Amino acid sequence: MMIAGHKVEKGEKITIEIPIARLPTNTDIGLVAHVYRSLHDGPTLLAIGGVHGDEVNGIEIVKRAEKQGMFKNLKIGNVIAVPLLNVFGFINYSREFPGGKDVNRSFPGTKNGSLASRVAYTLTKEILPHVDIALDFHTGGDKIYNYPQARVYSKDPESVRLAEEFAMPHLIKGGLIRRSLRRTAHDMGIPMVVFEGGESQRIDEFSIQEGLKGLKRVLIARGMINGNVEKQESLIINDNAWIRAARSGMFTCTKVAGDTIKKGEVIGSITGPYGNFSYKVKARKDGILFGHNNQPVINKGDALFHVGYE
Ligand SMILES: [Zn+2]
Image (cartoon, rainbow, N blue to C red):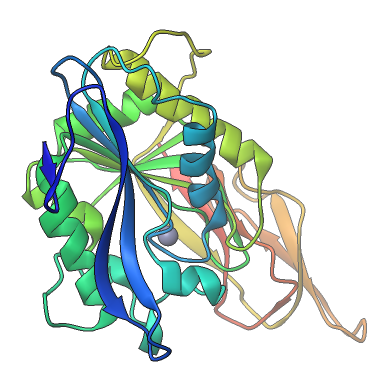
């Protein structure tokens, strides 16, 4: 296996650092990949975190899987672990690259583009061609808490299979976002599942544990490691919508991500800071909450709850 000019022999574990660009401070910025090769042929799994620099749970999952030695004794195949793709965002507590560029909207990237585009290009050109299956570990958004979930392209049976092996509490089926990593992987014939869990800039141990268990389940299912992990039935969500704030004020949840909700049920409230009004947020249909907003001060139209429907 030749990755970015580095030869990786069977049975070897090496770190590859692919230079990409320099920051204005002359600091090098690159792509760091840890490559674990077994002695036997088999699938190559990519476990990647930190596509969004502030999504700490995804980074922690990949890092911790490595620390736990999950990839140390592969029976077959290979693992490429990229714990942190967006170094710039990570050190700036930011989702994005300079100029607000989202690497996950910059794929497949260009050689001479912006920093985000170059990082996307490096991953697409140097790493993805070696990959057979991929898990892209994210976290929720800024103040948006996501219950541990797999997101998958509903029309790709191999990605759906991977998501079923991964077995998160929630499995959200949907489309592909233009210029996302998942879209590029799909175009290259690589089944990919996106993990979401917790909220950005906040370590959520529950989400980390779910992500780690899912990763292990996939490795076991593909015959790459021995072991067993408790089985879990995913709740499948085929359709979803946001419940948005009907007015501005202070928001509190009475139901949170992971809860099921019934039509007409009060799931939160919006109140005036002077005690001048109180508004009840109600469920419009029966559903399952897979994300909620932890931002206490909200404006009319802000997303409050992400609701899934079977
Ligand atoms: Zn993300």
